[in-house]
Length: 88
Image (cartoon, rainbow, N blue to C red; front, side):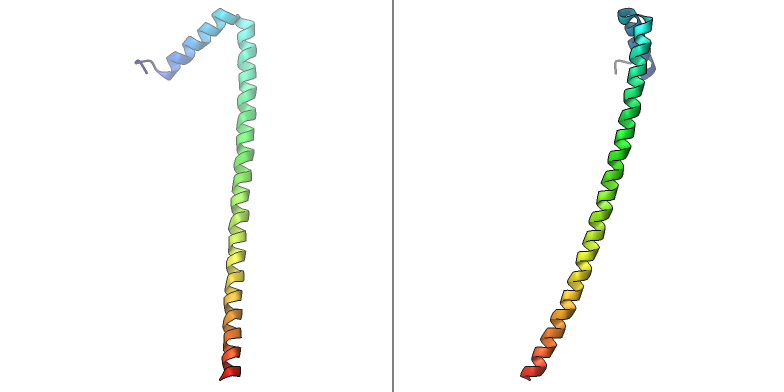
């Protein structure tokens, strides 16, 4: 970006913060930003856990439905065989 690295951008932002807000207010803003970042990471991890848990529940539900479908197919075969024996 215009030949300016990330470190230079951060230094400029900090310098501008000190100029506009003063040293005390800048540290307070930085502290609040740090707390926000921590809470954001914590929330993101909780959401990821929920998504992974939901995916696991869905997978288990699909497996259960597949097993039940197999049981129904076997039952259908059994009923068909019984009908054939009675008719034939």
